[in-house]
Image (cartoon, rainbow, N blue to C red; front, side, top):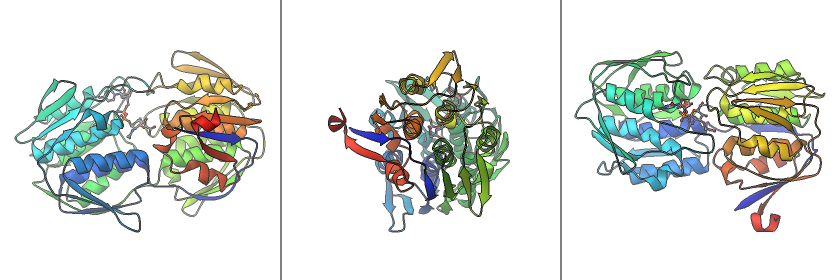
Length: 425
Ligand code: EPZ
């Protein structure tokens, strides 16, 4: 198991290209199961979660090839296996997004029920409710979701839950509805850019979808979909993470391949605390040259502040002037990073789903433990700002969502070594 050893204090400077979005790529790859014919998808990042999704697609009868230019070709060759087993699903929860496509295309599917994870309980009841409304019969057996439908039919579906809309739930129901008979209206649909990207891909496959990007998506079913070419949108969470890296190190970064319109809530917060963020061409320049101000942040579904940037901003606010308040409204238990940031000298007090951060602290390097993808990113950011050496154990979490993050940060002036854990201890 690898660890990172970070010598803090460097000011990051330079230019970096943001990769294609992991969370857009995963449902798009699953949607390729709906097509008769080959899809070619550009800008799929080279990450552990993507490799797990490729393994799953192969298990489900797809031929998957990465071309020399990085594009991924996906073509269904054999439809006999529709089973996503526990071994795969437990490694990557997003395997659940094969549920809708397999049900619609093959009429039956068996997907292991994903468990909870380090960011909290993660039920899939709303996915199942939506698919039942389209006419599926669904039962649970031996920890698996087993769904059947001779032919799905259009329906009016309310897809909201206690925490608002669901991203992968919307992906599953929208994908399944493309091949249903008649019209489906999804109310309280997720508006995230990743859903818009999926709808764009489905549309280029021949689907008839409107309203994506709003809470009301309308899908008119079609008899069949064909393969298509598609380019994945830039990863807004990776972009936000590197924006915080520029700010926390008092540096200046030019980030290429950024959709600033996908990041307005985060950009607004950065500007309000004193970070300079300017659009430049296809990207942004982010700079900070002074102690930042405190902020009040509440995570919300898009276009609100993303839960996937909550941990990274908390690391930043730990060294800002004064007291900040961060409330988590999507995953109320997503605070595993709080105890670890505290080990680095941050002063954070949690009350339920809210954390009060007493800023103005100088972070000091220490050994810490990565618990999930974004928590690990927050620890790397804190390590960049800390005095002395920070050792982050279990960095396999970060490899799930950021390609070679240490090499890319080092190219900007950071000092991070990847070592085998036994060497780090
Ligand atoms: C997606 O997860 C992302 N994952 C997550 O990114 C992200 O944190 C999350 O959306 C919220 O933006 C991928 O895209 C692969 P949800 P998803 O269904 O779709 C509740 C990262 O770090 N809910 O939108 O699984 C749920 O518990 C990851 O890259 C139900 O109650 O999240 C949560 O409170 C982690 N029942 C809320 O809805 C359901 O059936 C939103 O979750 C489904 C969800």
